[in-house]
Image 1 (cartoon, rainbow, N blue to C red):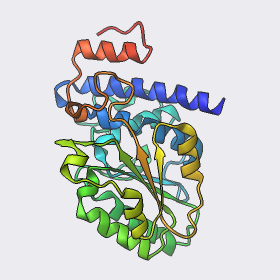
Image 2 (tube, rainbow, N blue to C red):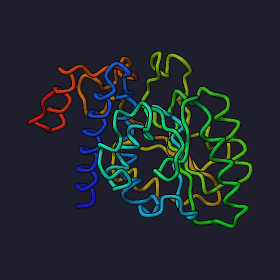
Image 3 (cartoon, rainbow, N blue to C red):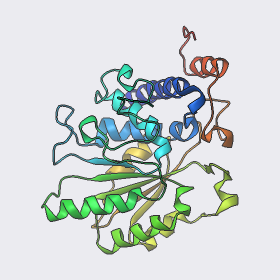
Image 4 (cartoon, rainbow, N blue to C red):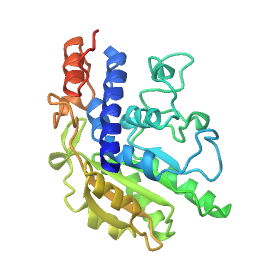
Length: 277
């Protein structure tokens, strides 16, 4: 029953993501990299993330750092699923005056957003700062979940921050690497091959494991796994564009425009039969 609930939530999240990307029109949403995150975020928000929907700035809350900023729309879909976003109309057109939800997240803790994304490679260093601050305050309850892309791991700043996190044994940090095999300009294996990501993170002092990032049980086990006084790295093998046939494993859907025709096709594939444009 639990898995069925997560799968249902994941389907609804994918519908929300398609809706938001479609609304962006020529501003082009990051459909591919959002779809690959869905199960990872669904399990986290519904089963593991500690937060109070009535007090989103509570000191003992867990934090999410969406370092791969192109995944922000997937985060909003997860927030909608658990009631942090009450109605998708709150998201508006994502861009423009008066909005708080943008294509790349803008920090607004009162609306459930703890990190401003955009420049890749920055999130883990930011999380290290939060982790140290929480430690100094004596807060041993809160965790920081950092979502990074496998292409983002090309950034040297990721590994500088990883080195410090491992050295200082910041076991309140959980890094999730969305390993969908693609980045903006092609396959990661062709641009900067990193076949040994599990061992790389271990070398930096992390408790590290590899999972199927669309398998609910494996995701659940990874989030729950003991850290033994170390930060944790979860290498999640995923499919970019997961759930939409024309977008799966296609580099052009890193960022692309959903036409009326493609929007209707995507919604039909997700089981939404009575959608019009």
